[in-house]
Image (cartoon, rainbow, N blue to C red; front, side):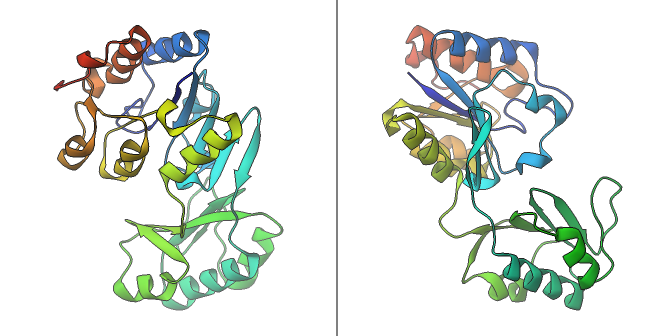
Length: 250
């Protein structure tokens, strides 16, 4: 049994939809007894609407901070509430535009119709209530001072602050343990540098044909580009046992 892990943006999703060819390939893999997971930096509550309805076995979100399988969260790492409040105060005091994601989304110093937008720390605390927060994200590139303020507890992946020790590959390991699988059973497919970690880790690591040079250089295999339904092509070749076909595709 393979455990497939698929990135979203630029891998299966073009900003508007997931192609039927990809959906059908996912269904074929599952019909043969394999399991398919989405593995994304996006929070569980922040995915495109269509993705929730895909015929997949679960989701690895927020660099492994949230793992959803069998209709429930099998893992969810929350930042301690007292620390969330300290981070929020830092944002208010320093005029930083950030947002928190987990069980809810709360934006600070920016207004969005679809999320909670408090005007001060007291309003933030009231809106937060007992909801869990997994990560926080700077809308603008964090400064060196921002990074220094949080680097003892969080790693930064671009503008996102993630609890130390978490990554897309960490999420894969959580799923492996849940199903009693091993690393050699895993397949990871992505297209950008944040996918390097999971593609390097997986037993079969695949870059999209439209992947970044850094990702392609470390991937064991390269499938066709997104616009040629590279994920579907990779899944079908694996189901056929034809790994040689997953070389030098552009």
